[in-house]
Image 1 (cartoon, chains in turn blue, yellow):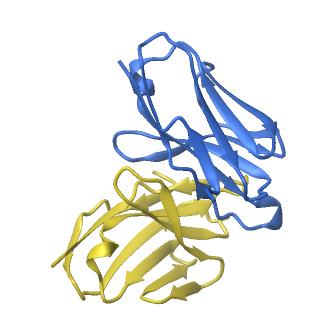
Image 2: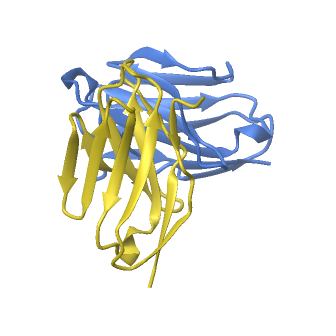
Length: 114
Length: 109
């Protein structure tokens, strides 16, 4: 069973389009995250949700909008895609309320904007 | 200054060698630290957690030095399969982790 899953795994689209990435975790964790890993492999947090509540919103363009319908799901919608959005997007989850900060990552979504 | 800094490497070592990586962090309030392993085109996978002074798991040992604000990862008896990028992470106090940019290890036959 996959603990943290993401769809799609690959996404190729043109500039200006709108796209969504979905994430689901079956670990029973209370906190979920979106990270962006650019071509230099730097992993940077974008958003964090705890029990469906947004708790971290880093300096990310308004074109990125996360949505958490329940604590097992965290989706990422991107409007008006730009070339610079090309990267790998990772979803992660943790049981932050227990004081354990280990995060478990999904397989990533490789987004290419042409 | 980045919150978590690592030597990008690459570290090229022969099989069977012992190799150590250091990672420095700037947030003195960080309490917990982690080492992740990331293979090419894959997700980061948790290797070790460090909540106190250190942790050991088989050939892997992590040590925390709070006074100097660094964490180390020691790999003994390196295997070809240890070749990967090793990411260091520290908690930010906001239910999130800050990651270093990773250290690349290449174990050679």
